[in-house]
Image 1 (cartoon, rainbow over the protein chains, first blue to last red):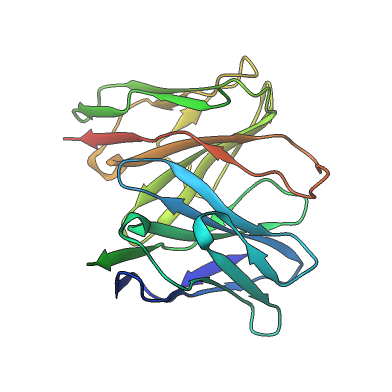
Image 2: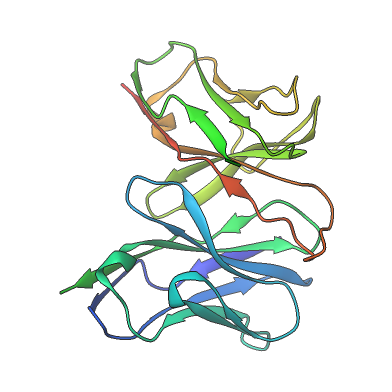
Length: 113
Length: 117
């Protein structure tokens, strides 16, 4: 079975600073990887996904993530955050060809002015 | 607009009073699923459906029922709610099988916050 671990439950950063949200997964077979964002009082919105090919994936709102197979990681990064990035971020994994997503525990990103 | 619609968005109820949370999608998706979100636990799958009349348990199905009589609707039923079912619930849907991109991205509803007293 797959599992996902988000290493930080909360990440506070100052506006315009860079941020990295960490995600590690475990699976004995090949997987797809996702990052979702949940803004306050809203549903989940897809930020980006890794299916195959280039290990650096670019998403919406200036976010990107790098797939590292040897370290089984899929960390999310943004070079300069904005107040509007305040949200909870979820890393998720699915088996290739399957619909079920297994989520991490979530990381709450707080941007301070 | 392509969307997943859940109702009610907020509900406070009492232990043992049956309730149903509705979920409807307008994208002709075969696959639908229910998740619950709890602090520190992320989202966990309750039930899912691969198509009409085909449903199966997810990781935390106890205390819940579902049905899939029509393709667009996938209601979540709590026959006798208990306080440990207080949570934020999300319905999601997607196409089955492989797309050109190789994966089917789930579209989520806005969530239903349920409190059981």
